[in-house]
Length: 396
Image 1 (cartoon, rainbow, N blue to C red):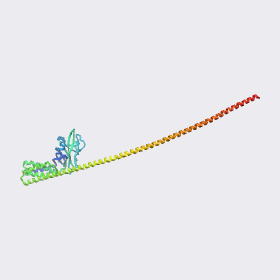
Image 2: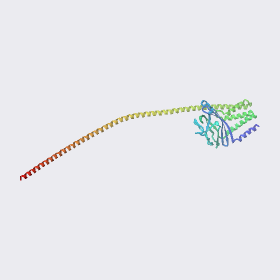
Image 3: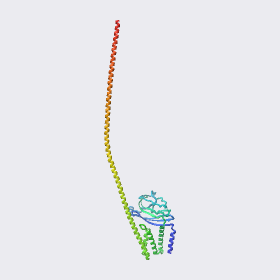
Image 4: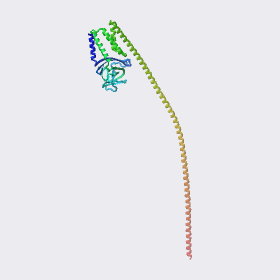
């Protein structure tokens, strides 16, 4: 009967290979120890991949829990485009939209953003079996009122496989078998069979576990195994449980050591980056100081040469003024001498003219006197001649 049920389960699983719905719970952390537990399911249906977000739980770290007292005002959001949004405004840190693999088609939303509290659904049409995983940057944003959000941190990336591969199918089949087996426990499945199923499941989950925190499914299975260990009487099976629990503790220590090492390397890298940033800042400051000092020296040299130039111009101006003044004096003296010469020449010409006029007047006067005397003499002589003629006439 048990074999028949198990066979029925396997047949049912293989008959549903074209439609798989996987529920997953992922935990994301920010650099400030903010934690998100996101529950979602992924459905694979003949190349159509549908992602439905079911629930999200938030826990802020010390940095932001003191700043944002009301957790219901903090939203979990991701974006499929960046830019302006019609009904909401996002400020704060710069956000990135998730990148759609080249092997898949996706119709972008009208809003451009998704609030996980609204349980959004996104769909992809996969064109190739070798499609890359989908990586969604998840952000925390505080509602500021008036349809405004301030994005204050990023809680890593939510990585979702879009490829319907064998690992995904195996994971779903194992999960289904586990659930069915749990139901069969109530109908007669023995604790040994349950323990064997959980041992196999823990082994598979340990292989899949790559980093902290440990998945809730793994911790649940380990917890159930620990309870079963005290009820199992089969030494061989009990030994297997002890081995798988030892592997679990070793894996946990390995991941913790790796996480500590990664944290140490991250801290060292951050310190190195900070040191490099300080060195770059100091180098920039030194460069700025050097440029400022060089500019100050150049300005001082310019001021010095401006002063020298000003003094030289003042001296040249004074000398030039004296030269011009001397030239003006020479010119004025020349003009005075020319005026004196002109006046002397005019006086000489005037004296010459007057002398010539006086001589001419004297000459004309003498001529006139001579003419006058000649006329009088002629008149006198003519009178005498007439008188003599008259006397001669009487004497005849």
